[in-house]
Length: 324
Length: 268
Picture: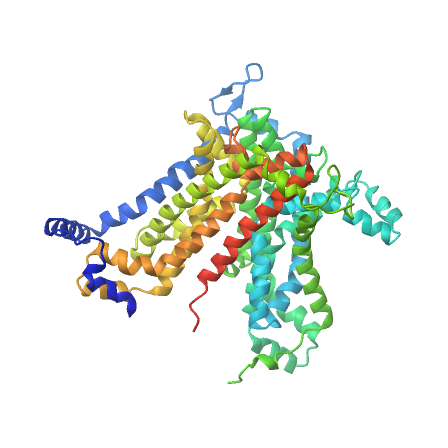
């Protein structure tokens, strides 16, 4: 009720408005009140113009540019619609980049789901209200903050002289670590320059995006179903496999939208911990930054957008959007 | 109906508790390690355990002009981008809440798009579009990028608050003879005040930390994340980077914690 007070309390307003001011304001108020469409246009105009003209406009412009091509001699963009740039995209080296990035995204998605599930399950089923709030913040803060710092932290941890190497040597397992690093594809000169290191860091930075939707979907599993399953003689493991996991699956798919999309588009992690084998993000960055081949860079970004479009369609049919 | 008292909650199996603790540690120990490294005496490598501890790097970092330049640029960008997002996000939320119109459902989809699409897509799109204009890459182009993905944060917060508050107070205010401006100042603004503050803080944290879109729109300007990224490839005094990293953690985590507190309902 107290919020009503100031309306009638005219003296609260700074300086009493003169009669002329008041009637002008009232007239404007009446004018606007009688024209709800105008008010709507005034409200919606600025944000809509911003998003549609600046943002959607840029995206469409990007798409169009992927159908332009680069003159190989002058380095100028030729503004004629052509599929030549997409032909250039279809080289074995670029296909390798797509395959590498998509495999990494898939591996990261599976690993985050496996790690997220126990935490989400504990939060949804066992944690007290107070503990749940704390755990929720413990997941939320890393989701929103310090992305670059969190990648950087792993440079310290995975460095050759860093903390992992130290632990491994304390455990007398140095030879085992060296053997793992010698493995083809995933290995490298040290953990901080290897696909294995990149994989760990990707899992680390995207894990919160998986925990929250999985937890939300687990919260919605009705207690009565679990009791019914138990009453019908299912062991806890059976209830988990045949009741909880199927019901939580849309949450996992919802989380995977983020982990997959974020991995596809990232260039910070590959630059910080990768070797000379490019990922999509790096390729786009070097094409705009050093090669100035905007058409090819644009065509490059169409691929992750296409992958995500297919992914989203699949996710929708699995009911992931209800879990968001 | 069976009451579920706090005490009757079953205890989780040991394996599940261990896994939970493990995942939480995995999420948070790396931040602690950065804090430790901000005090190391080792200037050139990341050796563990640190050979010695010192407070010296905080002083060195504070005397580095490049750090200050990057920090002030990031703060200015985050403030202006947050202000733009506050205005645009509130306008959009108000429109969506009070009117029905064609395409209303599409608004929130449009607003969330910059966060949902991979950052490189938005980044290169804005870059090539801005490149077509005469606008030089720098302060204002960074803000264009940041405001674009911050709007949705404010929009969501304000819209959720509108839905929780309901229309009856506004209607009462009008019935009591207040004009729309008085209603806005004395009824609507107090009701959405903390939602604005929370949305603004989230937007600030998001902007202060952003690197992917910024890389494409910054030109030669260096925000703090870009400065840090350049230190990853050509490090100079690594502990200074660690000090800055600790600072970034604090400056982005604290607003998020405060925003979370502000959006919780009033104590019952």
